[in-house]
Each structure stands twice: as C-alpha cells, then as structure tokens.
Amino acid sequence: MIKTFDEVVKKAESLPPVTVAVAAAADKEVLEAVLDAEKRGIAQFLLYGDKEKIESLSHELGIEINRTAVSHATSDVQASQQAVAAVREGKADVVMKGMVQTADFLRAVLNKENGLRSGKVLSHVASFEVPGYNRLIHVTDPALNIAPTLPEKVQIAQNIIKFCHSLGNSDPKISALGAVEVVNPNMPPTLDAAALAQMNRRGQIKGATIDGPFALDNAVSEEAAAHKGIHSPVAGVADVLLVPDIEAGNILYKSLVYFAKSKIGALVLGAKVPVVLTSRADTHEAKLYSIALAVLQADYQKRSRRNPHDPI
Image (cartoon, rainbow, N blue to C red; front, side, top):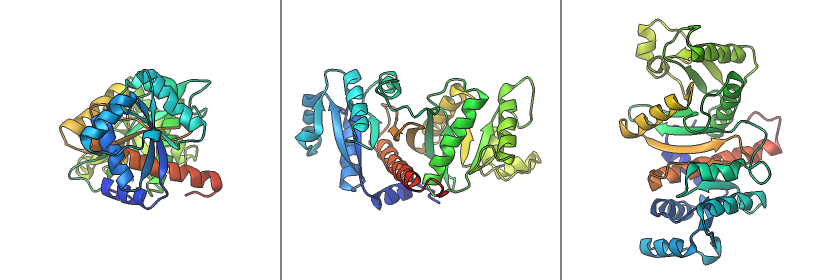
C-alpha cells in the first residue's frame, strides 16, 4: 500500500506516461509542475491558454516548451473548453485545472453535451501526507458537493474506494464524520454515517470497511478512540475521512494545509477521466503530486476496463 507522496511519484514513474490537457497554463507553479512531471517521465502535456504568456513564462523559468503543445485561447473559459475537448477527442487522458476559476473550469467538465460526465456523482478528494502519521489520509468531499444527500454520499464513498484501490489499498478504512461519535436524531450527519456503515456491513457498498459516526479525534487517534471505549476496525486508523458537507471538508482541508503543514494532492473523481483540481494558490509540488495521483488513477481505470471482473 502506498503511504507517502514519494511512493506515489515513484509508482507513477514506473507506469506508461499519460497525456494531460492543462486549462489556463500561464502560471509559474503550473509550468514548474509540468516541467517536473515531464523530466520524471510521468506525463506529457497539452497546454491551453494565453500562448504568448505561456511561452514568456516558460522562457523566464528556463523551461523548453514544445510550441506545438501550446494552443492559444482568448479566455480561461475557452482554455477550459479546449482542454476538455482534447480528452473527448482522445488526445489526452487527464484534464488539469491551471490558473482559472474553479467554477469556469468545472462548467466545462460538467457540460452535459461536451463535458466529461459519466452519469455518476462527481466528488473531490484531497490526499494529505500529515506529519506524524504513517499513511496518506484522504478527505472527501471538501470542494464539490455542498450538502450531499445519503444517496450522493454512497456514490462519494464508491468513488473514494476505487481511488484507494488505485493506491494499492484493497480495504480502505472509511470514517463517516460528524461532530460526535453517537447517533443523534437531531444531527442528520450522524444518521447518514450510521446508514453508510450498515450499508457496508450488508454488502451494499463493497471494497472497503466503513464505520461511523465518528468525531475527528476518534477517527484518527487510537488513543482517543480507546479513551471513549470505541471498538471498531476503523477507529483511530481511518484512511478516509468522509465529511458531512463542504463547510466541514473545506475547513478540515485548509487546517491540514496551513496548521499541520501537510503535503497535498487533489483530484475530482467520477468523471470519464481523472480531473486534477488543485487550488490556484497550491505549490508546484502539490500540483506534481496531483498529476502523479491522476496517473495512478488513469492506469487503474484502464486496467478495470480490460478486466471488469478483476477486483484490482
């Protein structure tokens, strides 16, 4: 099982490179991540955006950009549409958000006629390498679904299970979070968490161990779980933190980045191809980790299509 981002990158280096279409690539951190990924043989890139600015920034950074890989766009919206079109036309395996507003980028991804919808709920995952922990911790969904219903949480869980499988974790421990670790009829997230746990026990959600509700401390600290007398295969050792809503997820995401100084990579799951969705403020390192995660996910999807009955 992959436990660090160094291991994620090394695994990506061992796989055939994919082609990544980048929307609004005129950004220093994006181009540095592109250079790093190309040097490592992880991916090759198609860049969309202000061609003159992309080439000027590349020259500034000492990056050699293949001019044929840069396509001019008059706006960020057009760049997003072009990047998505490259995937639909079979020119790229992954689409990546550059220096563009998330709403504009996702509008192109989610377009009913020309986007990358698969018929499933799309969800965001942010993976963290947290100092002091011996594994990657995945938070879902901190950026896309505002107040997911129970059926939507089921699909979010299914998305993250496949993602964890792509990292070699065949039985991810998923903690459905709430403010407390007991079911409280006045707190709807605890009811959803209990339902997800029961659906998992009855085989309605497969490929993982799900339990909840858990407060955050009981999910990630074995000591806290023991102190409260919580006995569960997920308690204290969760790989995945399934949050109740976007506010909880977003606050947790930013706390792990700014307070805990965690390393991060992030994707949108459930589309026809992996979608790299990082913050415009993220470092080139975070963007590189996200690209590497996308490479692993793309490889997993290809293998799944070849062997639909093989539980890889």
